[in-house]
Structures are given as C-alpha cells and as structure tokens.
Amino acid sequence: MPKYKLIYFDIKGRAEPIRMGFALAGQEFEDVRIKKEQWPELKPKMPHQALPVLEIEGGVVLSQSFAIGRYIANEFGFAGKTNLEKAQADMFCDALNDLTPKLTELFHASDEKKAEVRKELFEKLLPAAFTNMERLFSKNKDGTGFLVGDGITWADIMFYNFADGMEQIEPDVLKNFPKLQGLLERVRNNPKIKEYIKNRK
Amino acid sequence: MEGQDSSNQSTAKLTYFNGRGLGEGVRFMLAAAGVPFMESFVTEKEQLEKLRTDGKLTFMQLPLLEIDGLCLVQSRSIVRYLARKHGMDGKTPEEKARVDILTEGGRDFMASFDPPGFQSDEEILVKIKTKTLPRYLPIFDKILSSSSSGYLVGDSLTYADMILLEALLNTEEFLPGSLKDFPKLQEFKDKISSLPQIKAFLEGPQRKPKNTPEYVANVKRVLDM
Image (tube, rainbow over all chains, first blue to last red; front, side):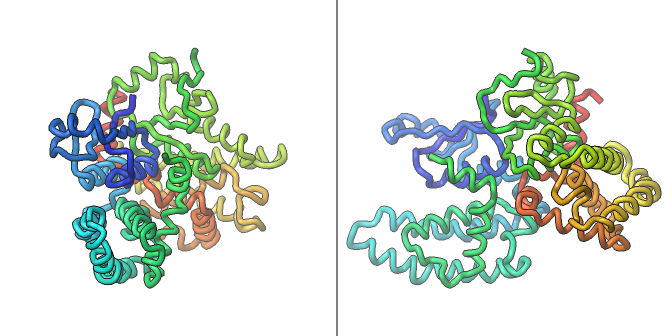
C-alpha cells in the first residue's frame, strides 16, 4: 500500500503538478479521482473543504496544493538545495498563483464577459507575468537551464503545467519569451516527465 | 519464494535509504542504461524487517532492486546485471575483464566517500587528499589519455565509466579544484555528465545529496548502529 494518497477530481487542475512531482521523483502514490457527485458528501470532511488533499500513512491529511507540492518536493529532493533556492522557487510559484483569481474568473465567466476577461489576461496580465519571469530566469545561467539552481525543481513543474494550460487556450502565448519556451521544452523532455505525460490518463 | 519479485509492476523499484550510500551507484547505472525506476525509502526498522521476513533480501541487506520479476541484491551485482542486459559491460572477453578491473578499482576509490557523516569530516578529507586521490587520479588519467573514444574501455559507455564519474563528482564536491592538474579527468567528467540520460538524472531528484545528519540518523536507526 503506497504511503501517499492524493485525492482530487478527475481533471488536471491543481493536482496535476503534484502527480507530475511524484512521477519525477519516482515515488508511488495512490491517484484517487472522485466524481463530482461524490464531492458534496466528502467536502465537509476535508481540512479546508477543498481538494486536492494528500493523505499520508499514519493519519495526517495535508491540503492546499502548493503546500502539498512543497512537501513532496522537500521529501523527495526537488525543492531547491538551500533555503535561498527554496525561497526562489516559492517566489516563482507564488507569482504565478497571483494569476489564479483571474483564471478562475475566465473559467466561470458568462459568454459576454469571457471575451473581456480573456483579453485582459492574454494582452495584459500574462505578458507582464512572463516578462518578469523571462527576466528573472535569465539571471540563472542566462536562462539556459532551470528556474532555480542547477536542477529541476518544483517551480519548473508548476511553470510547465501553468504555461501548458495557457498554450491550450492561446498557442502563441509564449511567442515573445524564448527562454521560457526553452524551459518548457526542457521540462517536457525530462525522461521521467516525458514518460508520465505519455502514460497519463 | 525467495528471490522472486511478487509485485505486478513493470517499472523497476529500488529500495534503499533516502541518500547515496551503496544505492547511488545503482541509481547511476539505471540512469546510464535509460531504465526508469521508482524508489522506496526505508525510514523505519519495521520496513527492513518486513523485507527480510518476506524473503526479498538474500543477505538481509539493502539495496534491493526489483526488476524483470527478480529481487536483486548486492549493489555491484545489480550494476553488472543492468550493464550486461544493456550491452554496457564491454564487447569482448578482454574488454569485459578490463571493465571489471577498472570498476573494482573505481569502487575502492568511491569507498573513501562512503563514510561522511559516519566518521569525522577531517579524518575523511585527510585520507582522501593524502591517499585516495594520489593513488587513483593518475591511474585513471593515464588510461583516458590513451583512449581515443574518451571512454575507459572500448568505444562506448560501460559501467566502469559510471563508477569513475560518481567518484569524480564526489571528488569535486569534497575537495573542489582537485582535478585541476588532470585535464583528461575533467574532460571525462564533463563528457559523461552531459550525456542526455545522465544529465537528466544528475539534474533530477533521484540524484541524492551528500550525507546529512538526518540521513546518518535514519541509517543508524534502521540498522541499530
């Protein structure tokens, strides 16, 4: 029986980076995907009435996708090597997370509002965010490697999932950001991640 | 049944502590051979006891690699199994002997990096600096100087290259700059580290960091040291 059980809906959403993290580390976990109908009954039992949660053998239940991500990154060695690197990784992730309310808005917007929110996101907010990222990324080996330090970290996994999601809506979203495009490819070509993407549900 | 892998997984699974030790050489070889692997970390005595009573550990020791329906133990044997399977053990009987010889020497070289955390750092560094490096660096440097392929034996990657890589990476970590008088060794280290499957491994989480106090405590706790 695996030590870890991840519970989420049967979509990528906030769980996909965590699933990918387990795959990167070569660690087993139970990938539980609940149906929408099961949620109302499960909801009150969750620590923060939300998913994903990570149930750890022994009884501890973690919620908050970023906390879960950081936890497995620290446990399995891809959080960054020093406290400073870990903070830098967090910095990139938190900056991306600033865009979540707007993404949620786009997802739930009525047809009339959708075009307006989409325009704000793709013409203003995302370019600004990616400009910052490209500039900061260039400070680490001129943006030829990974976001932080010498190796792949949690921040790269988060960025990959975020950018990949944006590319599904707007394929050209990274066209002005060659270093971030390079990073996306680099993550995509990591053998463990490539294998995970090939086999995922 | 002893020696038989009872799991249904098709992915290889390595069971060891969450650190380098004797497991790291197996991880290097799995990476070199392009074999994806899962890891199970032993953090409590009970886990080790269960593996022993389940009959998976021939000599009651770790590492354990469950692969191809087998339960493989003895780190050097695991490495040789993988190398043989993937044609990385030399092409002729003579080459196979060379690879074997250089790996035994390479393992002796690596042995000086096993104790950190278990013995005092000063003791270890003095030994590495005064005995290990003067003995092994010139020998491997000389072999590489007469290699036209850049590999230790023949013209392709073998398990001898992997143990030397592991030893050189440790050398740079513990005594930075030690390779400055050995450009052939530096070249070798860079060349092998840049091979795509090895680069991905070195940049990823399965490459373990130097021994930490937590790691040492974990090992002592599980092994009753």
